[in-house]
Length: 165
Length: 165
Image (cartoon, rainbow over all chains, first blue to last red; front, top):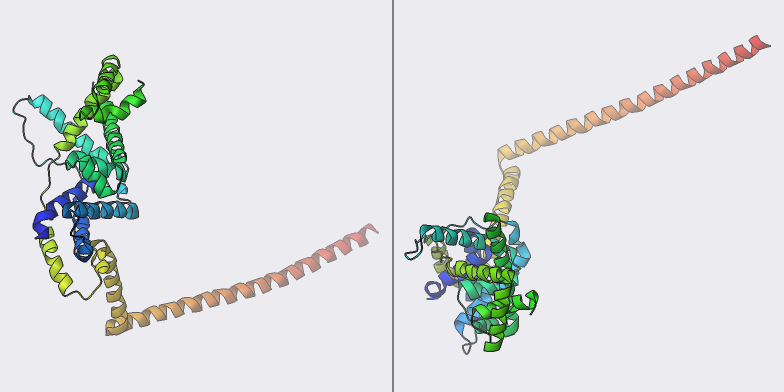
């Protein structure tokens, strides 16, 4: 069933993109409504996951442009899996948690296209080729977007680390 | 190799996507440029942080709504766009307005309320009309005072002239 197989992926993508659980819930429902009404148009020769990824990405970016979620703050970062690293001390673990929190909060500073590329590559672990296919973009553009997003986040992290030392 | 060119290659360097000679160039630059070296470290931290962001579970309420979508679609009486969660506040507002209007139009209490509103409006209008009439008579009185004052002033002037002669 579609919900069992894909709802978690779609919801997490919406959550990572919008940063708000409430927004993500609304978006997930809208995406599934769209999915059921577009099934008739689905070309069975295409990869279904890539097709759903395209549909999800398009819906999220369109809604972002329409409603400008950037005005609403991202949810407070709440790591559900605060696992202590067995091989590094608690200090390193704390730094990692701080980094995660800062990176999560800074995702909003990226433009929607760059944010989407970074989410797909670094959070969802998609290959550049998959992202390029789902976004109908040349491979070079996707790589450049991911690099620009990482650089932007790295600068924020570097500045923060500079402030702390 | 300048810093800007170096930054374009950082992601590819991190992911091992450069050929040997280019990777060696980047390595040399990094060894001599502390700024770029720090940026690379920050980028590694960003990737690590993004990769470690946990997946969030869907709430049971959302799952129930998602499972219900195909059923809703089978017996749907309204078009899909009206089922969008983002329209819910609009519907809630419209429902409140309709309840208020029906209260005014149909309930006996509503009619009494409507009558009392009409009465208050009429009282208000008549008060305004009376004030307007009073203001009109006041300007007439002022006009007559003006005439009297001007007449007396003329008389005073004539008396003065007679005295001088």
